[in-house]
Length: 352
Image (tube, rainbow, N blue to C red; front, side, top):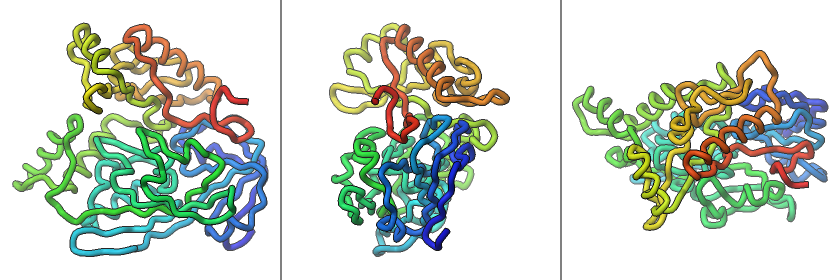
C-alpha cells in the first residue's frame, strides 16, 4: 500500500458493478494518484471505472485497475464560459449537480447518469439530445504503448454515437482527467428531446419565468427517476441497448404499419428510433429470462432480480431472446450497449 495506490488480491468486484454480477479479480489496484501509473509493470489489465456499463465474468484472471483520482480545477474562465479539468474518479452525477448550481451549463441533460467522469469519453455518454462530445475539450490519459501521459483533443477521440477511440483501443489508454467547456448563459438550453420540454416548461411556469438550464436539469432527473430503477435498489446497468439508426426508407415502411413509431432525425437518409419503444411494442416490458428482466417502467433497462445470483450466461440468454423477438417483429437488430468483459479482461464475446 502507498499514497498513490493500493493493491489487493482475490478482490471481490460485486460491489463495483451496478449489475451486481459476482466477480473475483486475481489482482485489483485502486489508483489514487496518476503518478502511480508509470511505476506499474503490467502485462495485462482491465480498467474498471464506476461499473455502470460493464458485464463482468465470474472470474477475472488479470489485473483490474480502478481509477479513483479526485479533483476539479479551473483551467480558464471569462464572462461567457469556463473550462474545467475533472479527474477520472469524480462521480458524474455529482459533477453535473455541482456545475449547474455554480451557473455553469451544458451538462444538465446528462444528469443522473451513473458512473465516473473518466468513463464518460469511452462511451461518449449521452441523453436527451446531448452527448459528452458537445462539451469536451480534451482528454488526458496514460498511453501504455509509450508509457507516457498524452492529451487527446476532441477530434482525436474519434467520437461517434456511443463510441470513441477508447473503445477501439481498450488496452492502450487509461483516462486520468477530462477537460470540459461550459457556458454561463442561463437562456441557453436544450429541451428539444422527447417530453423534456413540456416538463421543463411546467417547472418554469410554476415560477412565472422562462425556462432555464436548471429547469432542464430538474426535469431530466424527474423523468429519469420516474422511469429508471436506482441500481442501489434494483441492480441494473442502465440502458441496455443502443437506439438503432435505420434508413429513412426502412422507417417510412415501418411507419405505415406502426403509425406511432417515434423517430429522431440523424441526417437526410437516416433516423434514430427508440429501442425501448421497440421492446415495449414487442410485448417484452417486464419480461425476459429470469433473473434478467426488462424493467416494468422502461423496457430499455435490463434488471437483475434476486435471490438468484446472475451470471454473464443469464445476461446472454435474456439478451438473445429480446434481440430475436424485436428483429422478428420489426426487422431491426438491436445492439447491446454495456461492455462485455471476458475472463482475461479483454472486451467482446466472440474473440479468442
